[in-house]
Amino acid sequence: MILTKRLSIDTKGQGDVRDVTAEVGQIVADSRLEAGAATVFVVGSTAGVTTLEFESGVVADLDHAFEQIAPRRAAYEHHRRWGDDNGSSHVRAAMLGPSLTIPFEERRLLLGTWQQIVVAEFDTGARRRELVVQVIGE
Amino acid sequence: MILTKRLSIDTKGQGDVRDVTAEVGQIVADSRLEAGAATVFVVGSTAGVTTLEFESGVVADLDHAFEQIAPRRAAYEHHRRWGDDNGSSHVRAAMLGPSLTIPFEERRLLLGTWQQIVVAEFDTGARRRELVVQVIGE
Amino acid sequence: MILTKRLSIDTKGQGDVRDVTAEVGQIVADSRLEAGAATVFVVGSTAGVTTLEFESGVVADLDHAFEQIAPRRAAYEHHRRWGDDNGSSHVRAAMLGPSLTIPFEERRLLLGTWQQIVVAEFDTGARRRELVVQVIGE
Image 1 (tube, each protein chain N blue to C red):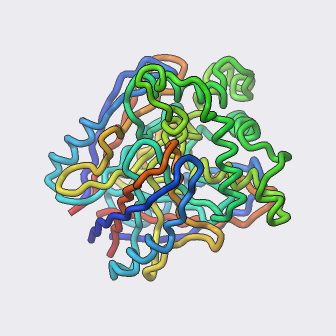
Image 2 (cartoon, one colour):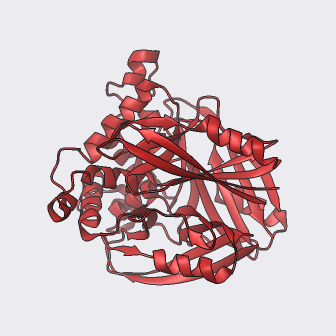
């Protein structure tokens, strides 16, 4: 059985990381499926999905690391060709990836205690993000 | 229901990024499944799969960022031990990852307008790449 | 049909990479499913899962690249707030991601010859890692 749901999240721009564990867990619980996997997919090319210990220190450290890899205020070909300002967002999002699959059993996601499902906003301004949460199970 | 298909793509070596969205979308449409997920998996250890806005600026920016992380002409243990020249390819591929899962509904992939499924070639020479596209749905 | 299994692995701390291809392949073979996908998910926020050519050179090169991105002995907000020493572990794990999905056919994982499924330990000390291996197929 397959269930496909959507979540909308308003983010504040680059560096904003949102914990969606409770929402994904609720979709799994409501599905009445006993075991399976939830896929979390972010629509768009300037955000990513991963897991992390959701506390403000780790969130700041991750942003700092991405700033080394793809600095916000560097020169990008994407800027030159399209007059845009979010080249760093595209690079970070492509590297992190848009999707994640988390197994569940007994209607509960098999995450660690300090492991949350997050959406990382990389775009340079506030965005409404659409997430697809798809549950496959039995 | 599960359907497993293969795609072959000829790439030009490190920095070549190929858009496979149309091919994956066609496999989903042909499957006659209404809803589910497509997993795209690249066979081999020197290429990766992700989504990005497929335009030449973003493709160049991503290559530039990977060149900072794992420069092509640096010293690698992999070179020293095996006489090979693609240490940078292995590092980049392991970081990006070989697989991606994209949900679909009404026989259409739930991608953003500017979000394409791509294979990133990291190897130092031209390669024939084999991709597995697996559709699970109902 | 869905099958959910667990693997426990004792790691030696940051930089330790373990090949779990044989274990995952055995779970697929034992499932008696002909075709489908295996999802490998590592529980916890300081380890990751990917594929790579499992040889000590590539393993060392990957560790070196992560040391550039998130140096072990740098200042981290996570340290400052929690008195912890594994900020680099959290950043590396969030970037690599905790899960991977590999298609199989005829009871065999569709990996390349030089492509192994690995767990990368990023934490600063030895850990017992729990992996979830979930097989969905028919």
